[in-house]
Amino acid sequence: MTRQAVKFVLGAACAVTVVSAAVAQQQNVRMRGTVERVDGSTYVVRAGEAGDVKVTLAEKAGVFGVAKATLADIKPGAFIGVGADPQPDGSQKAIQVTIFAESQRGTGEGHRAWDRPNTTMTNATVETTAGAVEGQTLTVKYKMGDRTGEQKIVVPPDAVIRAYVASDASELKPGANIMIMNATRKPDGTIEATRINVGRDGMAP
Image 1 (cartoon, one colour):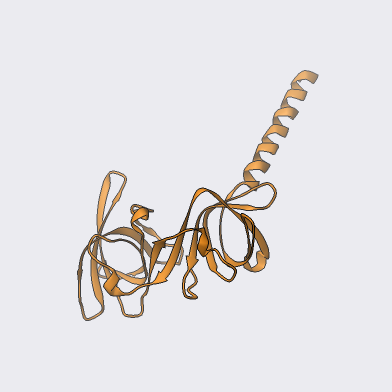
Image 2 (cartoon, rainbow, N blue to C red):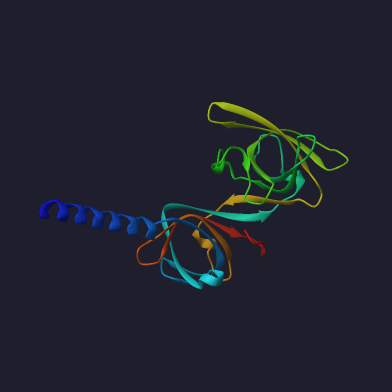
């Protein structure tokens, strides 16, 4: 290999290393924590073992309040997310149900594995609701690409039910419990968030 070729290969390798480092520094992250203080447009968040993390909001970032809800709030036409245990009869026994704000309709639509072992997540539109001995029964329908699907969801009395409410940065006050979604870690270590969920009335989002 000529000296010029060696220089070219080394230069290319360095370029790949720089790009890889930049990608690693700007990887997408999710984070839970509590707002400690607000410094202008920067929010200092206490994020568990990670300590204090500086967070900024991306342009047009979404802020959603997370409030307690009840079975009565789950109505036909609502778009919901259900974390559940699959049952022998093919139904899904809800562990938690999240009612999305209208502006979030279609978020993560479909039926797939959840992040807990042997559980599922279904994001879908409620077609019907009916009372049952074991709890409220929901029929939900969803689209995944060019396919459609349907699930029977049983919501027992002990299921956690909550609702997203469209909000703004005024809720990001010291003491607020938050979950940061779709964030990017910048080279300087700060987090730029495109979506933040804020727990209301002491709720952890």
